[in-house]
Image 1: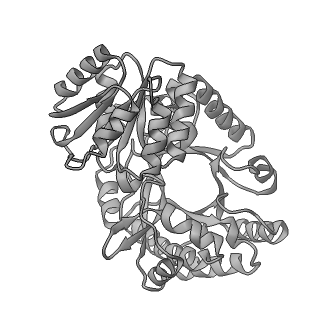
Image 2 (image 1 turned 30 degrees about the vertical axis):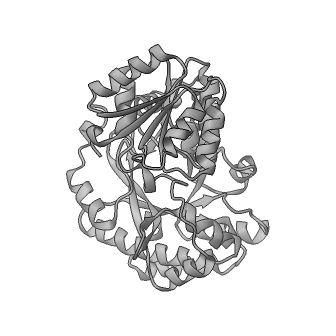
Length: 401
């Protein structure tokens, strides 16, 4: 969506700051700008009976009557499909904390800006609005019953989308992560936050896992035939690891697809609990013995991460995007990311940063010694055909150019 087509709301109690921000928005082509002095006024504008929907809200935190945090809570609870940019003169750590809170409320957060607002910063974040609705985790507010989801699995409505992984030293494309997407016949592309939790909670995740794994292996073989020798990552839920036959079934499927297991990375997610540790470790050890690489996914977000580091023979540590996003502008996040990279190297495994969206974060990760990056700075998740086209045109020399 072009800037000229956006409908933007400035939520700021300082009239001078509102005027300055409005002028900056107009200078980058935004024609429709609304202003509110606090959260209550902003909600009245958003809820206006005949009002055109707001696309992006720039929200201050410290405001009278209804502050920015309460406004964000109401925005999330009301399921309003609005992208948010946080603006404040408060401490960067506090901004990061509120950003995390907004994400937990289901807000599509484009980023944070410390005041005074600068044109260059605002322009970058406004540009992120396009395509943010379904591709980011948790952004889809649709709800489906378990029966609908299971019928969709039986109806083969799920496909892997591929997000590129790039070696930071050379800029070379070295792999991709296969991310499950529901191609709903009426509602279009549905994000995994809608269907993965219900499948895991009811122990129905295996059928989807095997369908995505089979399609990913077939795509991997095609990519190799096209001359792109990549390692493709597939998510494997801890909820699946109770069955000690799992490793053999995965190995048989992959080999039947004509792919050597060394070209597949199994990312172990912690969205479900490891209920039976011994069978889980048996499966993981057998997968490793059969040639698969194992990755600790979303490192830093699960309660048992440190235990997993000592239990699993993994070869890759993925730093969660909640730590990576805008980490170069936040000292606390910088410490966490650098420490994770350092720990990975001391354990002789690769460090992978997911959720990289800006050149600044990319450069900071390279300076910190990170091995591999993944995120919108490289490419959004693409379907099989689009990813094949992306690989043809990708240029390593442009990564930091």
